[in-house]
Image (cartoon, rainbow, N blue to C red; front, side):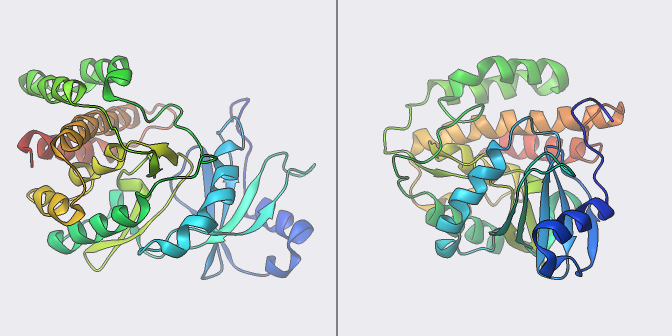
Length: 298
């Protein structure tokens, strides 16, 4: 463990439940692979426990507690909804939340075979999510804003992992996104972190969306990038036709953001290959496939 890590075990989770939610303590507990800022434990058949681990503050969990109950009833796909709150204690000095379990397999360990269905499903979900947010909705932090505000990060990713033979083409996509007109509408609800580990699939198509810790009110292009990051090749056009709210500028911004997200996945894959903390070896091929889709355009 590092100084910021806390070893989390099934015994710890069960002990916390006995202290704060004893009626749930008898349910089966199984660790869910993955996660970095938070660690997930399956609780029985219908629940999960989300434990604050590497996140330095509880802000992301508290955000989910506040807003997911507001958003979930009008979203057409299952999302994790908080049902019980776990408070810091002597046993575990951080926050934890009992949430509904979203059945399915994470896309970074699965695949989409029904591309048209998945494109329509994702478009319908984002149409329902992307409505004007209230004034008290969370603002964007490290995500959000115009693509140009994130050019330093893009350049770092590009230099680190972009294959030399396509680096110029990837940069051109980013430059086009930076040059596109900024979002001029009201801030809308944005998931903010749609990548293959944050969606689940079943029966060859999208079955749920998870991890809303980065949600914010802002430019929907940050989610529209999922047309390339999540969906199979050749389905982006179908997605945007069904979504039907993205003008040319939004699509250009989204494509550039998808390029940046793809490079990030590739970097995480390389970090995993090198055994670095938080690295995900299987994300490298996922990111490269997404980048190839970005270069194909709509």
